[in-house]
Length: 368
Image (tube, rainbow, N blue to C red; front, side, top):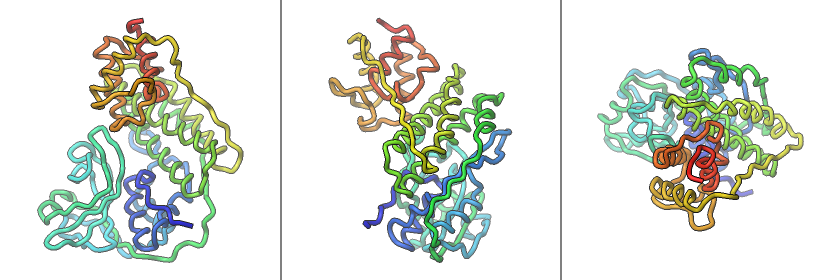
C-alpha cells in the first residue's frame, strides 16, 4: 500500500504539527492514525456555551499516543529566551502574535508550530491550512531572528519536547458520540446571539474537519459517507454566514440548529457501521431573467476577478472562491441591487450557485 501524503486540510491548528512530526519520525502516512478516534463529548466552555474543542494538554497527550510519539518534557516558558529549538520542539502560543498566520493582530487563539535551530535564529515550521476572513493560512517554513521570535512570544508559550515512541498496536476505530440535544439547544437559545453564532462557527469547523479525518483514516469511501461529509461542509458554511449576518444586526436563520441536530444524529449512521442515507439538494434554475443573471455574474466577476463561463452554475471551481468570498458576493449583491436576502436563503446550496443567488435576489424582491 502506498503511504498517504499528509493532507493538511484535515487537521486543526493543534493537531497538524503533531501530524507533521509523526510522519517525520515514523514515515509518511502515520498522520492518519489521528483519525482513528471520533469523539463528540462537549465540555463546558466560556459564557455557558459548550465546546468540543479539547484542552491543549489532553489533546497533545491523546494525539501523541495515537501517533506513536512520546513527550519527554513539557514546560510553560515566560519568554522566547527559554525556548530550546530542536527537531522535536513543539510549541503552542497565541496566534495573535504570530506574524506568519492571518490571525496576527486579529484574533487570540491557541496555535501550534515547530521550532528548529537555524544559524543565528530559528526556523518555524507550521503545517496549518485554512481560509480565514483575514486571508489564507498555508503550510510553510519561516526564518525568524531572535528579536522576531521574541515579538512572536511576548507572553511566553507552552512547549513540548517530543521524540519517537512505540506505535500503538490497535488500529480499530473508536467512535464515542454523546447525546447532542443539550448542546444544540444551548446554542439555539443562548441570549447573546452574536457570541453563540461566533462560537458555533468554530464548533462546526472543528466537527467537520474531525469527521473528514476519521473518514480518511478509516477508508470510509462510500456515497453515504461522502454525502454526510458534504452536509457537514454545507452546515459549517451556513453557520459562518449566519454569524456574519447576526454580527451585522440582521436576521438569524434558525434552520441552522435543526440542521446541526440532523448532522450530529446522522454521525451514528455514517460512522457506527450501519447503512447510511443520502439527501440531494437542488437549485431551481427555471425562470431567472437574463438581466438578473448578468447582474449577479457582474458582482461575481468584481469580487473574484473572473466570473462563471456561459452555462456554468457552480462557483466552487472558480479560483479564489471560498466561504469568505461567498459572503462578500452576498453583501455586494445586496448593496448593488438594493435587496436584502431572506435569512433562510443563506444556505451554501443556494449561495455557491449562480442560479441559486439569482433565485435569492428574486425572492428578496429584485427585478423580475
